[in-house]
Length: 208
Image 1 (cartoon, one colour):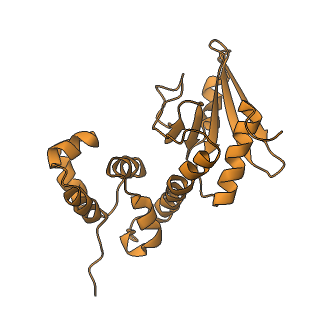
Image 2 (cartoon, one colour):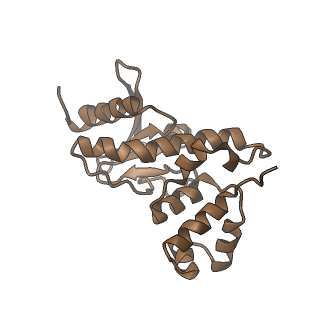
């Protein structure tokens, strides 16, 4: 029986292929040098950590996980949910920058913390910081109960004729709007419709 591949080994091979010193790689992913060696031995990683590693190494490990079942830890109780998360993030990382470029929108996607949510654990995974658009596995509308009593925050949801739903949180003190889109699996066509709906509705982008 063939030995199951380790996700950590793929990461180690990529680090060594790029000739990145272990100490430098540790700094790039904000961890201790000893923990890097532990990562190399892991068969699975938390989605947020794998996102950062994929970003700094410029290699979409989520895509590899999505197409190679041998990299999934089938004995893990969270394996099914993790597989769905990885599939969703893989699709997002693959298609969204390309769609944004075609819309002539700067496709720089970063990790971000929305204003007023600095103390909340469930943060968006990615943000278009120039536009205040969040892409999160856990919509911040789920945080509405703890903020709705605060007069500074106004929550609303919008839905297109195609059933695309996005959420907004307006900070009435600063007049800023944060838009949230759920980062689940979408086809390229669905992502394009979603992004065009966002920019047409909130930023007068595209055809009227």
